[in-house]
Image (cartoon, rainbow, N blue to C red):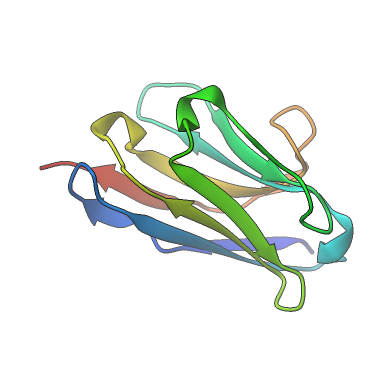
Length: 118
């Protein structure tokens, strides 16, 4: 069965950074696009970014504004999300997902909470 396990969330002050990790198993990781999505309290699921199989192309939501960076390590079946210059409106549960977008993702993990507050 597909398993996606996120880690690395936490409480950070505005302007701070975090690195989220996602350990994947149960499928041929290197063959799939991977993405990160997030959900803030009371809001809908929101796509953040994606990386293609092979890692040669990345896509980001407009709100990212060059603050976040997705990467992957196919040898370790890991996908990462570097979050920089975090702001309070980045507070959300962040999920790693198998697939490129909300419409095409087939699985996601349990999530890791990111809270940005002074």
